[in-house]
Length: 249
Image (tube, rainbow, N blue to C red; front, top):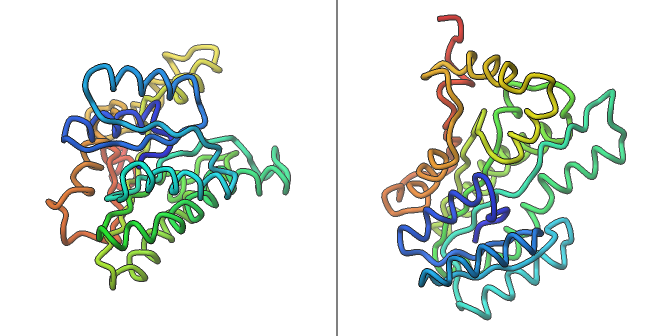
């Protein structure tokens, strides 16, 4: 199951799963894009299930799991990818906007994982959370998103401990700067998007370039697979050294 699986990192993970012979359950609130993607993949002979859902609605999270169980009777992995850097800051935001940001970026991860747990217990499945460097580096004007992603990292460790007895592995990927459609849309809000992008890439130590969605997906596939059978509770940084290396080189 891939949340936010119709674009960006989620789409790359979806396509990677198909390439490895998995059956992706794509969960997204974008019905038009999801239906189009499902038809396209099915037309190529791939088995796939698209479920339209607003994950901020707890009952819809429950229904997503019920539909998955009805369709397949099992679940081998959950990729909590859906979220949005919504720019809810301390000055620019409000208590109400902050709570809404947590709902969009953290609360639904708990809800969906809670409802998936019975199926994951049966399969000794895997949970993979997509976090963000903002939880560690800060960004400015994004208190809600940063707090939520910090919570994602904390839950990754907490769940890894709690679920040891079920042999359920829980890990997180921490991206930094990834060129997704949402990121491109954000860049286009600047007067000179190319100059802004160069300012960012100049601070990425390895090759001074953005991470690609496929590079995130490749790490996701590894962590979901038996090749990572003894890896749990880990925060894996796929960021070209952004979070940890000295940029003054």
